[in-house]
Image (cartoon, rainbow, N blue to C red; front, side, top):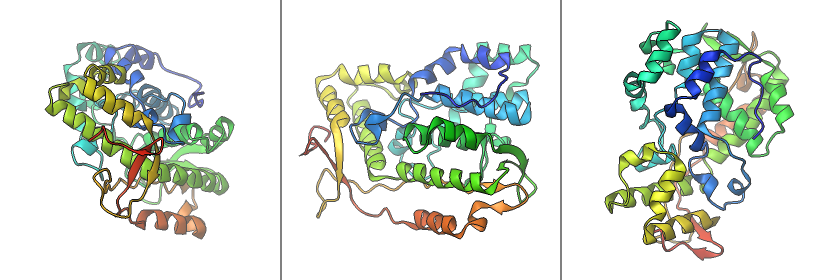
Length: 336
């Protein structure tokens, strides 16, 4: 996938850290949580978009808007504890809503990694300054505010989902600056309301994908496959900290789980059953959303009532119904 130019200057420490195995692993962990392996129409068209690409983009955004090495590195390292298939493992842990159950390992991984500690030391950066990117509002903040993390995956996905061209995404990014929000806090803000509205509207389309029936169902089913594979001794939970090809190879080393994986990859049609069939699931989801701030003017939802209405409808929509899927017109059976 063609990358957006987030910063014309890239400090050497980003390149040095990206060469470490801890970050290289993220080059084979995708941004779409295993959904990209299915055959659902939206996901089967996706280009490769890795957690490493995302992390580098986050770091570049932070560097451009703060020039602060510690904040930039914290953003670069924020996903190192992300397991294979990412938030699927939150589903496995029953954390559908917050999707934060896998974040606790970040600080421990950094402290335990001598190579990363040595790079930090060479730049005079304390380890504890980079272990928690939540402490830096430009890097991360609470939804629906705009942060580097939320901005990067939104721009990346709106291009990958074919909701916007690369040039449009670049134009939207170029209208963003570091500023202060209505609470006097640092936040990435838009300079012009029309660009903010366009970005917000496209981000809401991405949010619809994250809560879509196909996305929720795929993540739930994949979490069940992994949980069952661990219970059957095909793999261990620690294997999830390999990369995705290695985990898939583990699954496919067993005849039963190879068939389950192939069935998962063949999922291509969502439907709503009239009754509670065994193949159906009731799955909630995290409501990701962005309500950007326009410098000295306010949030998009305050400036544009039509966006406020669309956002409220999305946030209040019930997902309390059962969904199921088919593989080429047939109910999945080998996943059970």
